[in-house]
Image (cartoon, rainbow, N blue to C red; front, side, top):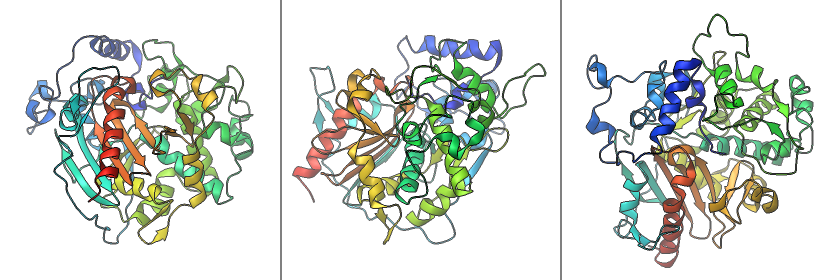
Length: 442
């Protein structure tokens, strides 16, 4: 049920499985605090070369164990193959600043707690690497911690899914993608898989019936097969399985019936990426660049991790600058309009904000998200501010509050992957800030 990024799924073989199992065991013990695990203080990868005990590697899985991952999430491009999401050659569109001094002291009560916490305290509690808040399009708060700089990029994890979902919703609104058509109508190669008779809408809203376990403690779970297929490293000589994301998707089998329940599975996003590529004639990184990133006036190129065939990982491979994701969120807050142009159709944003089927979502078992729904790969709160959210493991967020005219983007590197571990401090903090900005606009 966790939206665990494929990067941790790249382990193959008994040694790597043992490494990941030990990482899960570590999550049951008290982890180092944010201060004690600060990657800058621990001096990971510092030196030419770094000392042996400070080296982080991709091929042995060390890059995705805690606390090393606190460095890795800001340096994925240094460790694995990627493709660019180019910002183009025009000057970036600046964000105006109107910094406030009343946010760090904002108090809220975490879910299930009796005592309050301040906004500033929540940064450490959530192992924040960077956070920016826009109010009415202006930066009112911005912080960078650890090794993330304002000029750097950070792994967005499954926030990537919401970016893909936004492109999918836009293509639907533009009439280029029919949500009622079967997946096989767009990608015939998937006709014999579980996706073949699913509709595009069921993929967008993750109501597909798939035999695909994301139980990372189970070495036989399908998630590991997906990992092996997408791993860009050379395969073992005796490996006979799929060798790319596209090959793996063709092997996914049915379990249950489509349209009966929400089930969060990363492979839905991979299929959406394939559909987008087939409909547009461009890989998702190039389509994102041309149709959104360049039009936003982004400051930096973003990038996406790829498999051995160069296919971008649509389920969690995006890394981007903090302020550029804030521009993306601000575009959605303004109904798809930004930088003086309508970048995505207003109808696409309306469809996201409307949300999905609450009853189907309730079957997903998200106890801390009661009353929410899922639409176009966005998590919709249905609270009185109409907020909706992109969520990625280890604490990544885009939070859009239309009523408060607020956008929050946070990068983090928590010791526990599951969002349920930081939701108790994240959700009430974001809601409290929305109320503050609504009550005291400046």
